[in-house]
Length: 365
Image (tube, rainbow, N blue to C red; front, side, top):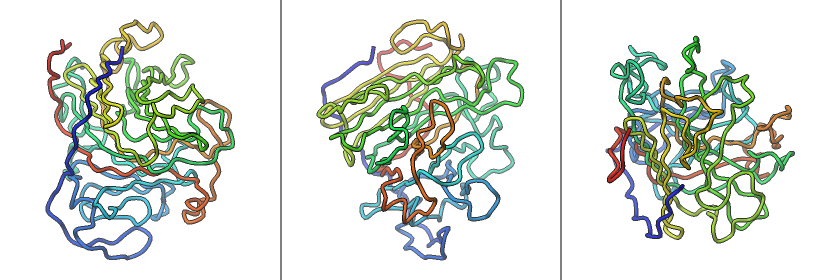
């Protein structure tokens, strides 16, 4: 069961680094002061960035490399606000990655930093659980992602409001590398965690929850995301969480700590306290202690993993049939879509990734 602690979370300080040179943004050659570049205030030395645009016309979302990111800002999708907090924004309709219909302005962990001798999907650039065969080859065993943020906006419109992903966004996740050969029972490119925020347009507050995706092949009908409540409800509940939920613009934090073979989750909000979960990543025991016979019996024990953080807009513009497709409106023009409320946005005051830490007083696999 999740452990709910009534003590308030402590303030999390902004991570500060030395400022750097002025930058050119993606849509126009616009100089900004060195102190207003995100990398001047956040350690982005092991991240790249995916944007909801295709300025280089290669039919893929633009990727800003680790090196480029050190002096990069975008006036619409990736910039510092007046408090030097990092804003990520993404419309409902824009170019998407090959395996998704959702747009994103999102960081992708890159353990190799600027060393391009190592491939993006290679061992050295990703991490694994300790029990994985060959785990010593990886850039790290386990890892920790800490973030403090507020969700400023989720889409106010959806063509299919009954779809679970309507009016929602993901603000942090662990992703698995997709393998060419999945005969080992791993490498399906699934996500052991996605941290969600969802708010219906007429509700007072929204809900924070997380999902675990059963680690099965794409065509397996048992493959699904299972949602666990944090503050408020999950996507199955259409009711307004009111005082139990998180308002737009209200700060909360999450920590995803994968130590050895176990994922330890901590969520904090000053008003609502602390919620924790624990999930083995080498067995099919769920966070409530029950065996999920429909999951991969070894969970993500054979996968290559990495963190992501930012805004991954879940209000898909796709009108296809299926669980995920909320037919959310959008024109593809940022100025219009922002004015119409057809976008998602989050502001982070802290994003820190690094080695895992042994949790105090807990048994470890």
